[in-house]
Each structure stands twice: as C-alpha cells, then as structure tokens.
Image 1 (cartoon, rainbow, N blue to C red):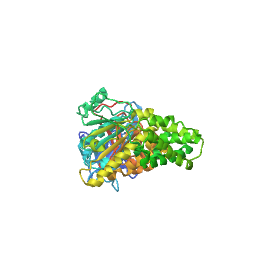
Image 2: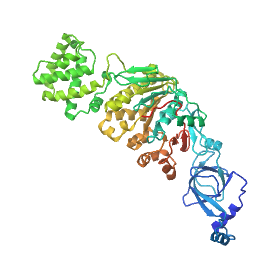
Image 3: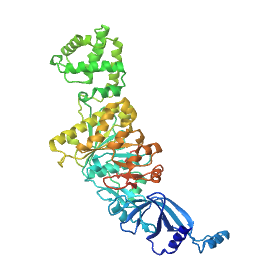
Length: 563
C-alpha cells in the first residue's frame, strides 16, 4: 500500500496545465522495463516515444497499455470505493509499460534505468529525428506515430553495399518501397539494376497513377513523376512491355559463356543424362579448338549436332537430319569434317543405346526453343548501360512464368557478367577510386534462387546470388533481395549477406527467421509486424540508426504494375 500512496501523491502533484509532462516512472521486474504513470487521456499509445528530464536523457518506447487505475491514496481510498458503489466514477489515471532504449546523447543502451519518480514527457519529432540520427538525402518515409522523417545517407557505401532485405506479403506495400528506395539511390548517383521477374518495374518512366498512391504522395508533399533516366532490357525471344518508351535494349545470352552445370540444372537432366552431356560438352569444346572442323565458335547448335551424331553413330545410321538442319549455313566440308571428328572419338564415350542420346538431345532442344541464344544479338554491354543515376530494368517476367527453371540460367549469367564487369572496373580503377560506381542489384522473388531447394537442386545459381550478396560489397555491389518468404532464404545468407532490413507485414515463420537481424526489438514490436497496415514497415539500417524504426514508407513517384 505504501507504493500506491506514493504514486497517488505524485499524480496529485502534477501540473495538469503543462502539456509536456506525462507522468512518473517506476521500476518493474525487467531491468529495462519500467512502468509509466500518467494522467488520464495522455494521448500515449503502444509505440509512442518518451524521454526523461534527467541528465543524461533517456529514450523509452511504450510497449503496452494503457491500464486504467483509480487515483487513490490512504486518505481517499474509502471515499472512492463509496463513489463506485453509488455509480459515480472517480478520477482515473493511466499506466503503461515502457522499455528503456538508449541515452540520447551517445545513442547507447544504458547500463541502468533512470531512478524512480523521474519525470518524463512525450518526445517531439525534432528530438526523435536527432536521437535516431535520421539524416541524409534518401528519404524513406516518416515514423509511424511522431512523424519524424526517416532518412539515410546516400553517400554512405554501407547503405548500398552491405545488402538489403525487403520483405512483405502480397499487398503489404513491398513493391512500392522497392521502387521508391531504388529511385532515391539512383538520384544519389548509384547505378541500379532490377532483375524484374514479375514485370512490376517496366513503367518507371510514367508517373504514379493509383489514386491511393497519389493521395499518400500528396500528404508527404511529393508529386507523382516518372523516372526519366530509365532503360528496359528485353531478353531475346520473349515478350516486351511498355512499347511506347523509346529506350529499350535487346540482348541475348552467349552460349560460350554459360557454365555447363547451370545447363544441367536448368534442363533437369538425370544422372545418366548428365554423364552423357559432359562427354558431349567436352567433345564440342575440343571441336571448336580444331581449325580443321571449320565449325566456328562454341554454340548450342554445335553441341546438339554432336549429340545427334553420337546417337546415329551408335545406331549405325548414316542419315543426320538434325545436323543437316542446324548446319544449313555451313558448307558440306564442315559437316564431313565434323562427322569424321566424332567418329574417331566415339569409342571412348558411353556405349549406350542411341535413344539415350536422343533423350539428351531433347533436353537441349527444350533449351533451344527458349531462343535465349541469337546469332545477331549480344549480351548486355554493361560499360554503356551502367551509368551513375540510371535505372536498368531487365524484363524477366516471360521467362520466369513460361520458361520454368530456365530463369535460373538467365539470372545466373546476368549476375556473373555483372560481377565480372565490376571486378574489371575495380582492377582498373581501384576500390577507393570515385569512378568505381556503386552498383545496386535488386532481385525480385529472391527465395526462388536462395531457398533450401535451390541450394540442393540448383546450386550454381544459388552460389552466384549468394556470392553477390555476401562478397559483392568488396566491389561496391549491393544486393537488394525482395521476397514474401524470408523464411525460405538460407540462414547463412541472412546472417552474412543482409545488413539492412525493410520489413512489411509478414507471417510468423517468416518473422522468426529474421528477428535476430532486427537488433533491439521487443516481443511486442515483433508481434506488431504480423499485422502492419499496407505501406508500413520496420526499417533497420544499423549503420545509420541505432534502433529499428516503425515507418510509413514513401510510395513510388513512378508507376508500378501489380504482378
């Protein structure tokens, strides 16, 4: 009863005309959890920030409440009970549980909490922006309750090159956050590549058109507008989008650059087919090094010709219909030389029935039907495409939806070529040279390439993406991994490759997989992530802010297409 008397006396002593004074705090059992006593109708709620009037100043966050209690002391205890009995409600006060976060001067977690009966008041937006060190040219959004601007430094490499995870369910606002962040990064002179597997980022040159998005932008004092420094890369043989935009770049893959293991994985070869494939692959490589074959470079057509020749030789046939077709532009001498070359080496190959080789040819034919390799097209010329302030969106929607696992092959080859280009730039210019452009590579549906299934069944693309995410920062490459299923990502990748987080509404399993990366976040704050409204996210940039910030994210000024 002694404690209640003390609290009641303190509440009676509050100057209720002072709008800044909220109440007093008292220790709870948790070393960082304190109880805040306030006057009724204090306007505090879960997630509100409060500061003490002490030196040093402490920053706290409300975790639960309000709890309503009678204003009672020894002298009026019986009177209040009598008032309740006759239907009169006596004066009440609120209490909240609050967690001590840090001291505002050094932004460090304190070794102990403030003393009992310390006065506190609700923190202002200005004070919070300073306490969270929320400064910089990249404007992510506003804190969900106080409204202070959540910003990061565009000139800080760590904000790009230490890996960012943007997670959220469908409809959570994830795509808007992605586009807004990447456009801000481009404005800060980074070079941006989006591997757009959903086709959502093909109209960034147009202003936002969704009425809800426009309203939200207007609330922030931002006007919808298209991003002009924008290029669309279209993959050979696939459908295009945004035909009205003049800046398209058609590209194909170079078969000579493709790793054999990714061909095996993308075509789904059996173990027996793998063995025959590598035998044919090695023979085709040898053929291209022999000038007498007159066949030219290493191509998918050449590999398929050799597989067909091996099949007919095993069957004792002399007719080579597929070879005649794929060699239509070659002369008879080239064909004869190729046949003789294969005949002299066939005895060392797997002596199986011809149909076994035919099955392998069918696998390669499925790859050929994707039209990824074109004689009159080349892979992207990154030296001309990667410029400061430019966004390059690679349209992979068609290959992802219709090509199945062949999207792995395309993503693998694109990322390898990007890494090789940046490596060459690094070697020529040096790590600290300002001409080495910071490069941000955003990958939609990241769980498809970085999940447990990919690690086991398609390790080549898994290794390539992981390598970019974990070690890319050494070459000023920053990965932005976007998914609604972070729980499917590899644990090592989350720990080593993702430093910054923007977490929209996700499920419990997804939350459990990343909560260790969120730093000093209470269970109550974690629970709130499970039910965030669209457009809100918990933002964690540890090289900028000492703590995660619940943020109303800025939507994209440009048009986003729902996948």
